[in-house]
Structure formats: C-alpha cells, structure tokens
Image (cartoon, rainbow, N blue to C red):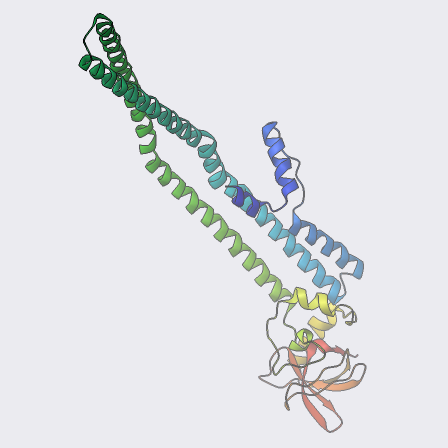
Length: 328
C-alpha cells in the first residue's frame, strides 16, 4: 500500500500534506503536478522565443502535450486512489486490525488454557502423592486440600476451555471471510491495472501526435562529436533533439518550412536555398553541406518527403530539408 502511494505520488512532502488534510477532513489545495509545471515552462519559453519560430512553436507544442500528460497523471492518481488504494487501506486499517486483534486474543486464551491444564496436572500429582503417604491425620488434611485444589483446577480448565473454544470460533469466522476479501481485492487490482493501461495508452497517443506535429529530424542531430550515422533516422522523437540543438539552430519560419517546401515539391522547378548549418553526407547518394552556402534544390518524383535534391556546381545529391532555408 505504501509503495503504491509512492508510485502515484513520488513527492514525500505532498504525501504528508495529503495525509494531514485527510485527517482534518479537508480538501487539499490543488497544485500543478510535475508534467503540468514542465508544460507551462515550455509554453512560456516558446512564447518568449516566438510562436512564429520553429523552436518556439515546437516548445509550445511540447508544453501543451506535457500538460495533457499531467492531466492524465491526475486522472490516474484519482482513479487508483478510489478503486485500489482506498479499499486496500480500509481493509488494512479496519478488518485486518480486527482479525489481528482477535488472533492475538486467541493466543492469550490458549496460553491461559495451557496454564490451567498445567496447574490441574500438578494438583493431581500432589493429590496422588499425598494419598500414598496417608498414615496420619495431618496427611488426611493434605489429601483434602489437594482434592479441593484438583476440583478448583478442573473448574478453571472448563472455563478457560470454553473461552478458548468461543474465541477460536470467532477467529475462524473472521479468517473464513478472507477468501471473499481476496476476491474483492482482485477486482480492485484489475481496476488498478486498467487505470494504468489507460494512462500509458493516453501518454503514448499524446507523444505520437506530438511526434507527427514536430516531424522527423535527420540522424545528424543525434550524433556525438560530429560523427555521422550511416542512414537518417525517421520519426525521431523531437523534444530531446530540439533541446540539444537549440543553441546552434537559427530561427526558421514555420511558413517557410510548411508552405515553401510543399510548394517546391508540388512544382517541377528549382529554387535557391541557404544552408543553415553543416551536414556531413552519410553515403555517396547525399551531398555534404556547409553553413551559409547557397545551393540549388529541386524535387524528383518518389523522393522521401524529408529530402530534396541539391546541386552545387557539378556536385549533386540528396539533402535534408530541415537544414535549408528557401530563398525568394
């Protein structure tokens, strides 16, 4: 139960606050969770860079997605608390405590019964020994004393045996109810798994939509120390790419990226384009680029939507469109 609380709310201070408000029977103040905070910071930063820039617009899109994930996270916590944690806590703090108390009481009754049987056994041994030594009046008095002790011990055994049997029956009935409790907790566990499944499915769909919005990025963005990959990676998750490359990327207008390249691909002509940053060709079919140089680009039928043909003098090859800025 405690570890489930940690999973749903990793912040210990927040858990303590929720516990205090729960004990005070008051509603805890609503605060933004971590994904929502990150989303808000991304949106604010994107607005500062400018929604019209590629990086600023991408930050805003990422921020909106993070806030949607935060909402899904909130729904997961609420659903899991109602359908899984609360029934489990009610059992542990209610029925389980009752069962533990009754079992402990049963153990005490067993100890009382064992002690009473031991005293009865000792009384019978003492009575038998006194009967063997019955040679005088004082010994007869001892026999009577031990006989009374035996009678008293037998009565005590009957009482303690009755109390033990009654307590054993109570405990047995409580323990028999555990099977129905297990069935109930099994349904709660299924609800918890279903809530998690819904949450992760929502997050996956949100990130998938975000990836489609941001588009694909060449594998050079992900290479270390300018080491080029053998082939471009399609549909790369964009947030980490944008974060690592933001320092070197100039601001590119969304209208250029979306409308300019689309227009070029739909027409049969060629255009001049300025190279935004260096690009090392991964193979002989690609053209290496140098930042700020101007090349001629055009599209050919059947080419991947993320690439164009580029020409520099008598050299030509495929170039990634994300490295280019079309010139009027």
